[in-house]
Amino acid sequence: MARILIVDDDEEVVGTVYRSLRHLNYDVVTAFNGQSALRAISETSPDLVVLDIMMPQMDGLEVCRRVRLQSNRAATPILFLTARGRLEDKIEGFHAGADDYLTKPFDIEELELRVRALLRRASVPEPAINESQPAMVRVGNMALNPRTYEVTIKHKTILLTPVEFDLLHHLMSHANEVISSERLLQEVWNYPPGTGAPDLVRVHIKNLREKIEPSPKAPVYIQTVSRHGYTIRPLDAP
Image 1 (tube, rainbow, N blue to C red):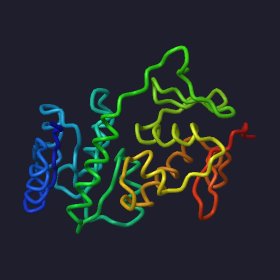
Image 2 (image 1 turned 60 degrees about the vertical axis):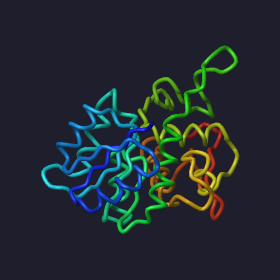
Image 3 (image 1 turned 90 degrees about the vertical axis):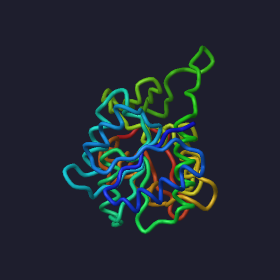
Image 4 (image 1 turned 135 degrees about the horizontal axis):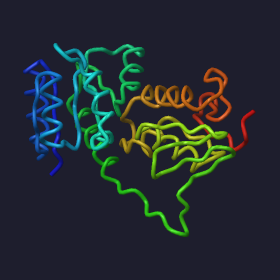
């Protein structure tokens, strides 16, 4: 049974999410501020954290950053559930290390779908590495290491977050193929068709470009094909 931690200073929101997830037979733990959230993460080892941003003492962004710095918790999926809905807020949330972002007021069925998708993605075992499956995925002068979550480009090595790794790995594994946001939501995030927000893809593409591109505003690796999606260019960048 998956264990989910709900963190929010609004008791009504906690109660609503708690009842919904308990109805789906998840083991649910609650916390009402950032400090108690960090204690609960340490003591209960949740499989997923549903986290508010605006809380007293320590906000959700700081909680997320601190979790991502813990080697034994860094891959724990984190879903922000917050009233902060501007694109800038989402970018800040994803920079802090969030895997997904849902704004209040929210639809409980959409929350349940996103929880299921995050848990499915987190539980997929890493492929075995053997003689027929090399450790590195290579496209042009990019080499992606599944063991370390690092991408090396022209002797520069960059550490990726788990969700950035998943997205880049998928694009590199389909080099030359144009993949739509909808398809990425299904194949990388495991969302059922018609669910998930294209903003999720756009923000993570932006984050990846800021890490790997020589000039993020003029990308040479991750190309946008207008109205169709994204593709990896299998050529050495200048």
